[in-house]
Length: 217
Image 1: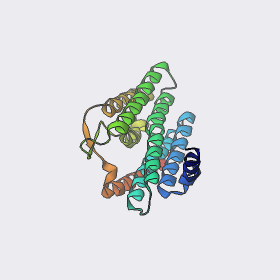
Image 2 (image 1 turned 60 degrees about the horizontal axis):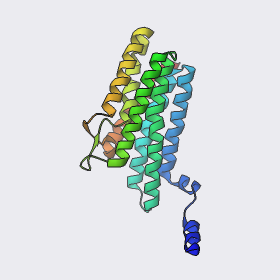
Image 3 (image 1 turned 135 degrees about the horizontal axis):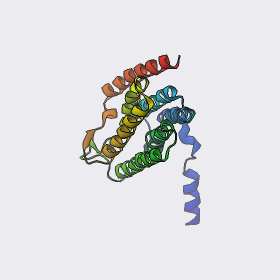
Image 4 (image 1 turned 120 degrees about the vertical axis):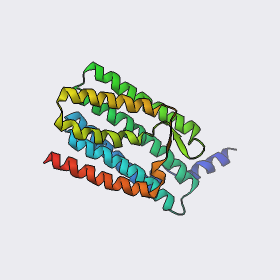
């Protein structure tokens, strides 16, 4: 029995060995974008944060597209990639928008409440998906978390034409609305599973990058 256990441990791949898997590299690139978004949110450089947030989605969708096209990936590769994706999602689509909300609200206590609801909804949504998967094998139950970033970076475009007070309310309501949709029973399609949607997101990502890049000048 001991010999078998030793052999099993020797055959078990190392953690770092999964880094060379291209979809995982893509996922980690998305995490880098997420860290930059958190960094700029804390600094109050919100236009740069928006660029990081939308690129996090682009890499998230891209890793799935790459994984589906690759041949020779093992069951371990797919399982590890799936777990890595979920782990990064909570940071990209839960932690990051929550920090953004608190930062824009100048860390007032009321914004801490909204941030908690956003993060709690994200954790519940991901836990539900990890447990039950796609509804009927085709649709998500609740609004998929990547939509949080896609929608919020669009909403934030109007920040420059409204007063801080007015936009704070709009942004807060938008964040809570998304949190409610994340844990709702609505059925939504898996948009990232369609290559055409991935290409459409690429156009959207470049457009958002151009808009906020121009605002940073």
